[in-house]
Length: 383
Ligand SMILES: Cc1cc2nc3c(=O)[nH]c(=O)nc-3n(C[C@H](O)[C@H](O)[C@H](O)COP(=O)(O)OP(=O)(O)OC[C@H]3O[C@@H](n4cnc5c(N)ncnc54)[C@H](O)[C@@H]3O)c2cc1C
Image (cartoon, rainbow, N blue to C red):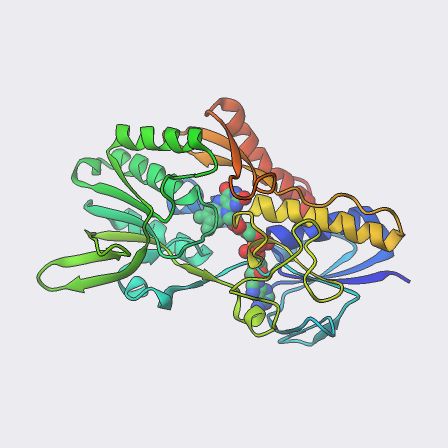
């Protein structure tokens, strides 16, 4: 009898889980994959659209094109998860599983930051990033604050990447000299695991006149008739802005919060296997508190290690060692330059270690290949 695996969420973690399961188990597995969205969009593609480097239709990987032969894709909204019974309820039915994988990512809580929805522009959701493109196109120059509102957030390089791409765009439009750019992040330096990359970013900030405010987050946005609009930081500082590009507070999706899977905000898992405290229920990616940053590359590598463990168990083989907490990604540094950062989070969790590679043509090519390879592999079609 084949094993029924139910994968909730078709993002980085869910798509990789399905691809690897199908590759390794073939006919020995029945996979169902559920997602409510019409398409998957890479995080870095959101920035490409926001800064006019690509069109929305260029970056939407539509689930209607999903063609993995042994995976049943369901375009439905999950409304309940029962981790004891290993079932998920959607707007269209109830699904049962032998193995349940939760890969539902992180949602954004705009309401938790007063003024953000009314006075700012979040650019982390697909809709928000695409709408920010129009906001930026209409921007006539002024003070821009790129600000993080919560303690943890997806893709820690992204606010810095946004600052560099914004600088380039404002220069190109001839309005940089009447604009300021300030970046507010909760970490003391841009990317703590890599002093080299942090220095590379701060050096470029200094060259471009971009202000870095580290170790703080934005608590609220305020507007008053007399003094204009301000971002209020956690130390009482108030930064004036004409345009606020925000990263909202992250939360587990409501359906996960209601399931009992989460503790202290996120789903705790065994870091090597991605197992939750419920038998045969696993979780990967942004929805967990595994100890790596919320980034696609970590979700993908955790998914691979989890699948290898599941497959070994099904086959009665010795279990492989499990996820090692490593991952690597590309970082936009402005002027068309792309750096590369590899990080190990588990070797010494108190001091994650990073390795930075300066920009070069090979990074730019490799970043383009990264997306094309995943499109081909995950969706079962040519790049
Ligand atoms: C601007 C930006 C740039 C980024 N750049 C990078 C980068 O360069 N490299 C990198 O590795 N990461 C990057 N990231 C982070 C990356 O996008 C995420 O960390 C990654 O997608 C997480 O994968 P996941 O599988 O955990 O969740 P997701 O990919 O978010 O997938 C979760 C899925 O669950 C679905 N879902 C949620 N709730 C329900 C429900 N109730 N019913 C049905 N479906 C549901 C969603 O529709 C979604 O498709 C970036 C993020 C942003 C915002």
